[in-house]
Image (cartoon, rainbow, N blue to C red; front, side, top):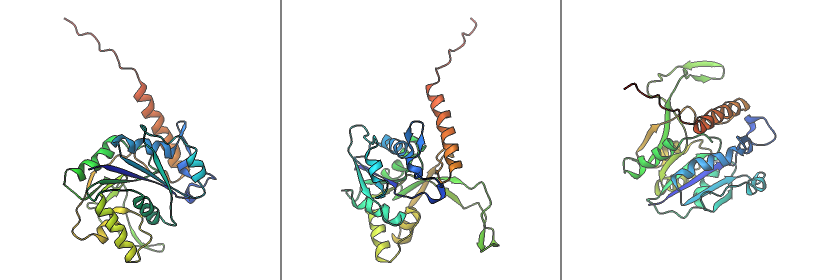
Length: 246
């Protein structure tokens, strides 16, 4: 069983509101995309596929994407996130029992615990797919235009993060079934799998608030602050233990 990774970086970042897309923004001297690739590389994937757009591909090809001697493959994305994910998946030569990670490049601060957690949940046989998840801090409402029509209980609701891990046969089959059914704009692969693979078992593993998704300039500022804090903690010299009295 091998692990493969697809890093989705084809978004135009309309909500980011800047000339360059968020995945090419600087984060501690490297791009957000490079940081995201470094994060998933801790799992030692046999294949890393970066899905980008035709507009940003020339810039991406100039980045330092090499990870531990692995050749990283770059493919062009599609018009939607679902199309981009499918193109990335189709470029991988995977056995049905291999594990494929799908990760948003806009989440550059995901920790090793989340990456290994979703892989372990699938490789152990406990599930066909897994995602980091967190409780909802805010009240959620169903609306009809400006009118609030229902406020569901938060008890059974969770926020899903990436990377999401799947058996290769499950995620490839789900995308093929979705395409055959005419579904083209799924915003999340867990939902796609649940709709198109009967009897599938998907589980959640503990997520992390630091694994935020950079969507707006404010998110970028928060991510930069978190990165600086984490980097400072990583390089902080160990404190000398105070001698105990005899």
